[in-house]
Amino acid sequence: MKQKNIVILGGGESGVGAARLAAEKGYNVLLSEKNKLSDENRYELEHHKIFYEEGKHTESIILGADLIIKSPGIPETAPIMEAIRLEHIEVVSEIEFASRFISGQIIAITGTNGKTTTTLLTHHLLKSAGLNVCIAGNIGKSLAREAIEDNYDYYVVEVSSFQLDDIDEFRPHVAILLNITPDHLDRYNYQIENYVQSKFKINENQSNKDFFIYNEEDIETLKYLRFHRLAGRMLPINISKQSEYLSLQNKIRISATPAQMLDIPIADLPLKGKHNFLNIVAAGMAAQIVGLSDEQIVKGLKSFVNAPHRLEKIKTIKGVTFINDSKATNVDAVSYALASFDKPLIWIAGGVDKGNEYELIEETVKKNVRAIVCLGKDNEKLITFFKGKVSEIRETDSIKKAIEIAFSLAESEDIVLLSPACASFDLFKNYEDRGDQFRRYVQELALNIKDKKETESV
Image (cartoon, rainbow, N blue to C red):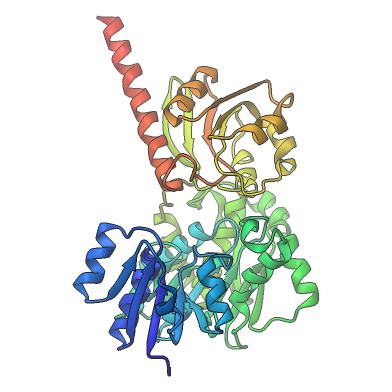
């Protein structure tokens, strides 16, 4: 690379990781964070003698860069980005910059829903089989941080559309595109076509030596493929085509090549719900491509435990089960959650709306949901849409109160499901904070009921 002066925009994990990598490779580096840096990130930059500024973007310095590495959270409409584009300075994402220093094979996973679960499962399958593998990207450490030492043979990377927007040469050996449904459209001029194009950038640098795993039942994916010829070896997944096999044999099939067909009994799967069949098959196919045996894949599946906030069972209190699905930040993810239970639901939903179209889940809600507890600062859209379609709708801006209301509305054997369909930033730091608070207050409720029962018995 010819660039000498690099500016990193954004001081989160992605930005600090990129700054560390650029400094290690001998570039002149400035990290610029418009807001305040965390104490931990500030200390790391100072410890490694990396120049930084916080609380501002000094345009005169930034526009003197040879290369800009942009953190995924910064939109193109930000004033500093508009100034950079006018100067025609090269801008890349952190995963693009990191990939230039990685010698191992990249397995990259994207999709509106399911990418974190699929990334975690793929990593677990490879790691449990003894491969030298790490997990990075939109989960865990940044890819740039892992590229500093470049110690791994395989990099399993979760990538978002924001990270893909500014790639140039990023080339995964295995690319997985799970699905595309409306999400983050505020970043794409509310045009689904722009969002689709962003997702398909995961394939644009692949060759016929690489593999592209995709969901051929996904409507937006099929529409795109109708008019575009892709590189890479195309490996479609069609869960519906397996439906007859599923019903007769109670198994799913994983097959990246005709020579390797692995049938897994549904009872042995680590994740429940039809939507997770796609995630399991995709991860299993990636594992087959890198050489795992059937025995290694089966062993890995049996030992896998999913991350928190994804249909996570918290506790059952007086017959009412509390489920934490805080990661469900769009309507499509909620549709999977609502369809995963055959018992009446008390649905806790709400937050920062991202252009949700609740028509997609209207019939499921009318069929499965006993009551809705709206959790957010502005619940008008939720209440207006579902008024008259659900017998009981309450609202609050307190998650503790939401849990108490839901419990009061629930009957024995009901499910209280936190599956918000919205971003969390009105009341919480992020979806993890929302899910953690949900878990804490459910456990607190259980303790209070236990203490009350013991007091009454005395």
